[in-house]
Image (cartoon, rainbow, N blue to C red; front, side, top):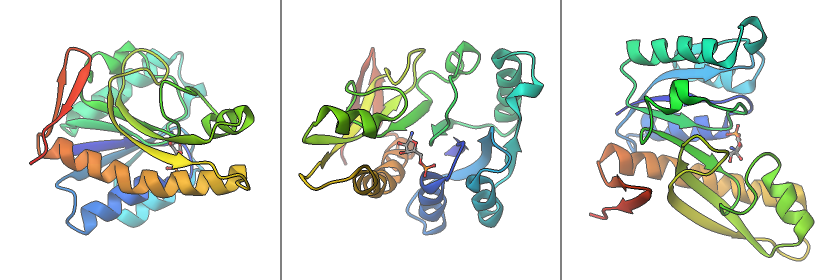
Length: 201
Ligand code: GRF
């Protein structure tokens, strides 16, 4: 499976994927890192992992569609099968969603459909929920709305802080995301209409 990872920030999920590939636990190659922030830590991580980066500055382009068309060209050149969004903090339009529908996944730090959008962990804590978690889903045209592939719960204890919950969620994400990508690599994830079936071997 040839994947491209899109990320804007720290890249702990990028690292988890790269480590899983390296360890032989993930039958995939990371063909490209797509990043909209030249100074992001994930760029450094890609360099260390030997992954080619495509770094772009959105403000240098006339529109989202224009830079997405350029990204699409790179993805096509690299024959990318699957786009893995890992903290990519930009809206994605039909330019990429349409050609990659069913072949683009995202990880989100809540149990969707609760708390879509930014600051999902803060939103959950402000509402005082006792259980939150992590969702991996296919990307459609909406904000964190696509068909759900996998979810894991994370409890919010009485004494938890935003930092401690963030840490717990990250730990869960770093296990779950490589696992889901491996299911896809093995052909175990089927999208039928808007529902996902996992074929457990
Ligand atoms: C993760 O919490 C992910 O759920 C969200 O963005 C964060 C990215 O973290 N979409 P990192 O850059 O992978 O460390």
